[in-house]
Structures are given as C-alpha cells and as structure tokens.
Length: 271
Image 1 (cartoon, helix red, strand yellow):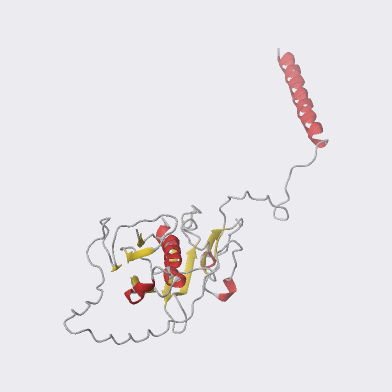
Image 2 (cartoon, rainbow, N blue to C red):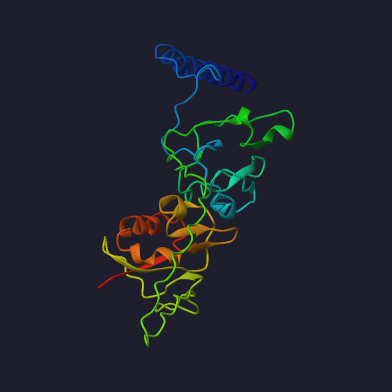
C-alpha cells in the first residue's frame, strides 16, 4: 500500500512540475511586463492627486485653501507692506505628514495657485523635510494653469472733495450720502455701500453696490476697480465718493462681483 502511495505522489509531483513549466514556457514567449522602478514609472492619469505645490506668484493670500483643509495641514501668515498692493505672504507651509490629498484646498482657489501634481514620491529620512514653506525662493514653482495675479499700483491719495457751490437763497442744503446700515432688501446684513435688492442678469447699468459679511480681504475687487472698492484689514469698503460714475463703471463692478471667491459683493441693476 505504501508503494502505491509513493508512486501516486511521484506522479502528482511530476505533473505539478509539468504544469508549472508549461506556464513558465508560455510566459517566456510573451513580452515582459515588469517595470524597472525607479528608472521607469507609470504615467499618472490626468485627475491623479499627487504632491501639492504652490505658485506664490499667482497666490492672492485669500486663505481659502487653509480654511478648507480638513486636517489643518496648511499654515498661512501674511502682512501688508508699504509700496505693495494686496497682502504679502510671509509663510505658506504645508505639512505633508498630515495631508490626505483630498483636493479640497485646490478646488476653491480662485487663481489655481495651489494644485496637485502627478508626483507621488515624498519619502524622507526625517520629519523636517515633510514640512515645506513655499514662500522660500528655493521652493519657487510655477503652475502653467494658474491665473496671473493682477498687480495694481500703490494706492493714490484721494483728491480733496471740490467745494460745494453756494446754495440759492431759500434752497435746502443737500444732505450727504450716508453709508447703508441694517439689511438689504434680500435680508442680508450690509457692511458697506448702498443696499438694495440684488439683481444679477448678464449685464446692465449698476445703480447700487454693497458688501455683505464674509469678506476674506483677498483684494480681487480692488484689483478689478479700485475706484469703487477699497480693501481694509478686515473687509472691503464701497467708496461712495464716485457713486455718480457707477453707471459708467458697471462692467468692472459686475466683473468684480463675479470674481469674488466668497460672493459678498452685491449690486442692483437700474431699471
């Protein structure tokens, strides 16, 4: 009985070798599929979310990416410098130990300054190398798909208001225009400007402009038309001095409202 079992085992063993060699011989005649990494690498698909990079030339320091990050891996610090318009980033750090490559930071960026590349090799021998400050000149990169940041000249001193013509005898003096307070006709609190009921057709003649809470002081509106919008440390302010010319500036006012990343600029079209 033991001889029969031994012979059966031998036959099964030999058959296993034959099957294995048959598979081996079949693949020996086919092209090789092994990729010699790292000398050879797969081409990543277009929507692959790899290593994050930041084009500081396009960044307007709006902080939207930092606010959208669910793991707080982005840290931004900024200041305003004399002779330069807008905010100037002094620190833009990304901690890649925390980043989960979700894409939530790149989606709201109005200038495509932060984006996912197709790079995926980010190994290092220490933790320090996993934190990169993109403000440093040695980390400078350029995103070919970024929107160019519009540089505007330094703010000019406002001209003195012309002296009012003497009123005719018995004529009531014109009251100066006061900034709006309370809510607009849509129920939104008005921070600055002359509130009304927002009407946003494709184009038209602008009659009223106002700002509701939520401004992120990104300076885009002032970059578009500085005669109407002025960005302070905390919000954007509608300059009422040039209200008589809003109709001629309607195109730029509408462009500023359309370009606002947080949609706090409202306007009413003259009927």
